[in-house]
Length: 153
Image (cartoon, rainbow, N blue to C red; front, side):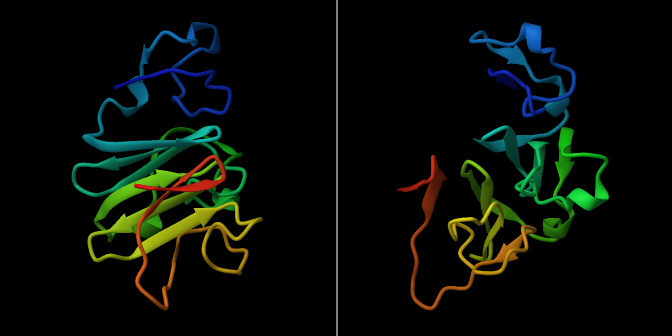
């Protein structure tokens, strides 16, 4: 897998040096062992859905948009793909990322959200940032969370 960017927040992995990054794609060795089905990226973080439906994240975890409790890590940067433990029993079939939040859909049709919720983008009022199920009172359609806007998938 290849990627581009500054890698200032670890979103491309720990083995990439900033001086090597730019417009030219570089090999992302940190994710080489994962059978990736889909990738999404937010502001300084990356999320990966594997072919077996597991969710991995890496990068800047300031608002717990990686689905990993900041108190259990040694800092805000996660520099290699890390399994989202709270969703390991789920089979994830779709993912998307906003600037500071993540959405993922399970094979059972359950939508999970986590990360920044300053504008209610997680779909619930509580401030917990870890993966939570979004409950709908009426039929919903999938949207893509990008640049603080919602766009159809």
